[in-house]
Image (cartoon, rainbow, N blue to C red; front, side, top):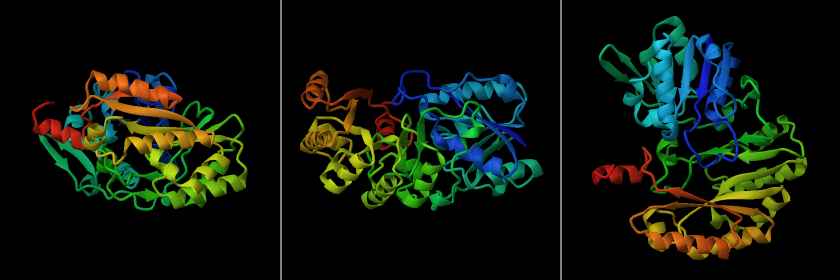
Length: 371
């Protein structure tokens, strides 16, 4: 079967607008199907213009969606339905709102789809067995069916390394690599634990190193670890960093980490020695009441000390703040700017507190009739 996956572009500036990078979900799904003998393409709209000729040549079109891209994803679904194409949605937003997505396509694969995508395609080819596909939502006439949820992939090491050849232009010098899924924390505005479950899972350091070796890294490359919290399992991270040092990779790396990881001196030394040059820190707020409402489990003192420690080890800091809590006001914004300058945060990013589906904050706003 010929299958095309589309990763729509976000409508506006977003958290990683500095980098035109694919999310890895569609690439891994495409890799699984390619290895099973299917003809697969992945089109990332931030990397290339959407080629409708290539899309319309597909027998099945998979469209990924997060909340910020859902409007674009649904518009594409409507266009393809009008052309008689079979459309399946996946990703965070359709996983939380499958019936909404089914108004714009035929199917939704909810949750982690690596173990369900191939059985789904086989069922489509054989024209029976859809009711057996875990995590599948679909419509027959006026009736909507939601199969039981699929279990999260417990053994991430069983997943294939992403095959970027299924992207027309491959990827550039920034190499995306995922070493874990989930997060042991549960911030009120974040949907990670709801989407990936509350069990934090991680890959063996040896497998990650094998993937890195296969990327043929050069001095001009950057490894971007896609984990929501790269050092959530410090011992696993340390082992990986030791292997990276032993391999003498020429590329530097960056990742999202918690600022309080700096209390671990051995980890900091390994980060520096393995060529970490930049970290993304979810600092969220300098208002203690707001940090408490976010369930961040951080203090202002920890934030200040952590930033200073990263700088001591030659690692630059990108500070991300979420503004707009009920405990914030205009004074909070001014004080946050002053704080960033005082602590010499290298780059800073302000985001508006948004009730993302799947988050505790969304449920709170819904209960208070504030959506």
